[in-house]
Length: 222
Length: 81
Image 1: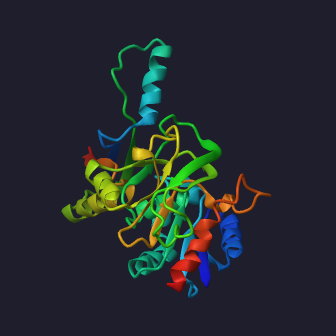
Image 2: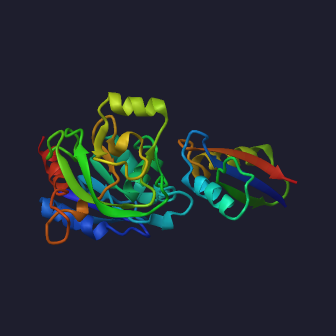
Image 3: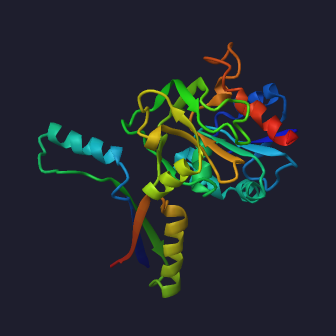
């Protein structure tokens, strides 16, 4: 199974995401933002970083990169897509996911190990977890506050589309402690914290992020 | 040449931490007039000649597509005299 990892100008976490894909048991394939070519991958990861310097709004310019047109088309046909941090922001700007990520409520850039609870373990990217499982993975961003209107929030909660919530104090002002959401079909997932930085105990606080990268293998077997 | 101004503001219901930080910095400098502060973005776009209706419609579309995110922001387009 081939999982594409997109690099935009300013992406930081593409190497870690590729390493996580390989450790999870799939083959990581590098994709370049300016190439309208998905290289026949079975799934795509939009990694974290500061694509296009976060100019205008985080993810606002990346959304119009040539590769994103193909990602949006493929996601519509059911291809699994995971956006982490800046990737989540790109997915929201692309309207593949509802809502938006805004400045952390206390204005501070946060970098810490964060406990989250897996709320929906039935998406393409969370099936290796159990519903209610708590994991610790790094959270590092300045614009991680998930915002949407009341109707969208009710829809996300009502349809079980919140996939993960922060445990304990709200780190960034996200509505309903939302750390990650999915689309209606469960193939597109956006997540603010970074599972790709927690895939082995040598380099991460835990290895509990690896489940996102093994889940995708289950999705393909189905 | 004409100048088109696009003002983009966070919707009233969206938390504006930057505006709040400015609001709390003002009294520290002795400025005590502000009840609240909201911070936005301003785009100044120059075009050749006077804008046509079609051009203004195009700028509206660009404002909606790229310059603002309608999920969290409102925008106003005006021609500056």
